[in-house]
Length: 208
Image (cartoon, rainbow, N blue to C red):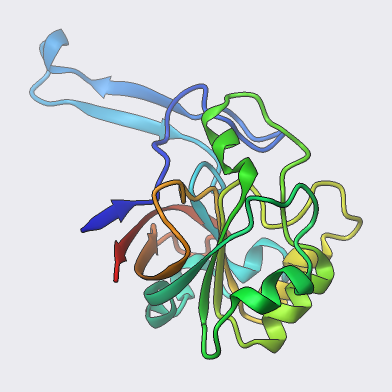
């Protein structure tokens, strides 16, 4: 059975401070006498459940349309970090990661905040040391269940630079509430935006 890991995009949903609230405006309407329904979509490339391309923080980094599809589809390991109310450190990850893991989904206690339209700044996220640990472990994709993999306010955005600079694809704003710890089949595909720094994506998982 496939489980949807994607939050729906809608007006009034939580966004990163400074990003606009999504707007979905009708361009044509059957109710107004048009032959079909069409809409104009206006939102940030990092809205809701979304993927960061290296270009998001790395000058001349790969763009969203250049990402390796083989990384975006395959086995992923879900780890439950919901007891934590602080940054995720290497010591939190080490006992939970089996050998050979290449895709990692971080389930936290603050993922439920995606359902609150008010942004919460003290969400659980990865420390710089935790990011370095994932590089050493050979992780190729990491996802988390709030709007950023990185704690808010870290000077210079070290977590993003470590991950994206080492080619690790980052997925943020996932809905992991329906997943238990263990292995799943993951499909996570962004829009193919030429030159894009990121994109909303549709993420689904199948239990093994």
